[in-house]
Length: 166
Length: 104
Image (cartoon, rainbow over all chains, first blue to last red):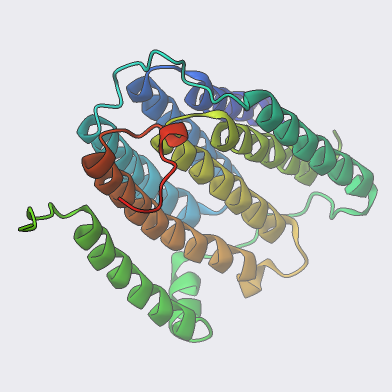
């Protein structure tokens, strides 16, 4: 636990808060990118280089662009006159605060039994590739099928429908 | 905080709660999807943190969970945003409080 951890954590949580609170959706998408980048930095600090760079590629690279595309295609940058928060926002906020209180309580209660600081694991990308091709080959294939299905499904769902003759 | 794992778990809990608050309180469907993405990312941070400080990091279980979770979350985001665009084209709105019909 050093200064760098607190710095990255503040960056990440601040980005997430801004993503949820900002009124303009394009600004919110940019703040979301900041939060994703901070999470990738936390992964790198946890010595998970592969997951960190995968996070940057997939989230900062692809998902953020997808979100911006969706916002611009749906004219989401125009502010609605009823406000950006729903009528039941107080209930939602109370539920979220309750969930956070429960999680934080559980973590702090369990703190004495959690594993202590230890040497960084020496895992190379080579090891990850070997594991993906041996022990985790079935999940890998299933994810490949899932990604293909999601790709086709997203294209079909968002494809422009022809006007049906009535 | 003497234990480094505690810090990561608290940060993950905070990001999860922020994502949940966003998903529950915003009116725009895209903002709800953004909140869901934040929650998924908080879960990934937990998985990676437990992998790093767990007993057998060389088995790579937590890392694999996180990698597959990233792949599934990407698929979810693509389909979700496709649905939002499709609904917008149909109903001319992304406001969830005006979407109250299953039939088009």
